[in-house]
Length: 77
Image (cartoon, rainbow, N blue to C red; front, top):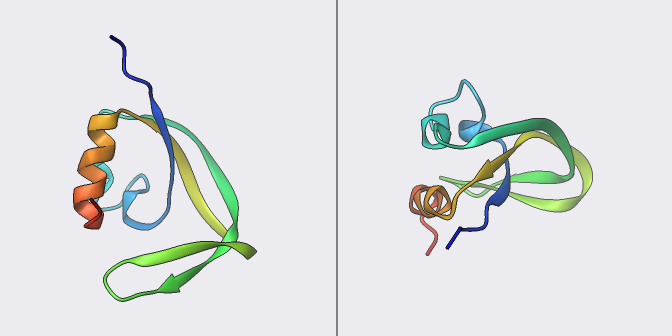
């Protein structure tokens, strides 16, 4: 059974050339993009909410396995 790909928008340390991008080694970079939203400093991890402002990032096609790795990095179940 073929698994369905996931698509993610990343900013910060997951972007190309940044420290955590190595977790996306087996992923497919698709394009750079801008999301309408704002970033907030929540301590260890920033948060983005949709709304006014611009967040520059990248869109990647990933597998469910890579998503699990990213969830562990972010401390998300």
